[in-house]
Figure (cartoon, rainbow, N blue to C red):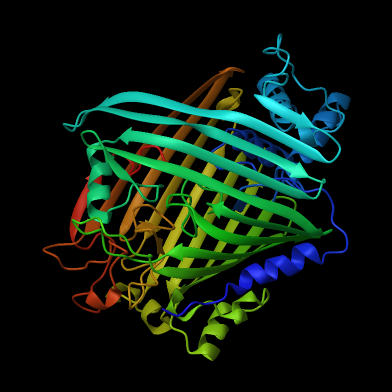
Length: 522
């Protein structure tokens, strides 16, 4: 089998070892961390902060965010902010600064009443910490124990996660992190149906069966990051990314398994430009009864995302993505950071899957954020003008949403409403190999395509130490009928469609659910 040299690693080597100057660099705030809720509130309050305003691509740089929140805290102390922080916001800010103490210069961290043996938990944000001029290290345990029941015949459901996470910096130049957990879980019937259909546990990679209707798997993530110049941050990691301001993303979500990526972030003036090169796992057959394993096929995913702070309250974003079959290796042309991928494809004769998208975020009246995404998988002009004919080639997706903080002046009561609409066959290509999937799971929305979805989320923090969250999800999806591809399952090629016209959202057998198709991975 032909081997291809990983040119992007060589590119990373050149950037890191031949950069004449570089400033201090940190790791990134992990996705799903409750710090993001505070950062959303501060973004809406500040209406276009030069750091907090760029929220499209996650995770966020820990150093940049901490230093900005530290500045907001100092301005609040002086009474110089154009808005008033609630007492709970102030508490959350202090927790954020204490948890990210290595970048909160001059801040007095919250200290435990008594450390353990004079060594552990000197700071409540770290089980064990090292703080020297040239080396910083934070080590924390990870534990997530959940238990419940489902009324679908499953019986008891549970999540059992134990592990360790560590992060740090070397020489004030190189940031690093590692997250390692061992997991066992038993999920409701709709999640087990997903596993049976896709041979993949949502959010996980390789897995084994655990007792009755359960799954057992490791979750290993990690990466390094550094600042190549004043305006350039580089991250090389095996992890997940998320693009968008919604609960869901129609561009790239954190639903699928981890993947290897190189992320180059350029922030200057009112622009934030992201270049992402990723290596994903293409479609592969399930293991046979003999358990024989083979190297899984690899694809390459390349993304550009440009966001512009148009006004103090309005941020616009442009996104493009290409998924390429990895059998021909990685094309050096994709390393060009400022060119449309489709033009490269045409020059190379490539037939990978291309997507483009637009998104917007508007902060209004310091209490409301409006956001949205428009994804164009294919756009046939003459058919758009005759949209009622329902041509299969019109593959688009739309998201609209709103975040409302301090609802009706109730402090720290936040509401989020979101609607997602995805047409049939969106995210699919003619060969199915380059569909927007990774490890048998969608890379964007968990449902795939051919659906509409409505989400309502209420978050309330009546006391600094009490977090309450409620979610209501409703979706209607068109499923395949009698083995006929009606455009909802994005693991199929769109060439297996039964016809060219008459495709509207919810073709096929409609499935009505009031639950999300994920349990713990979003």
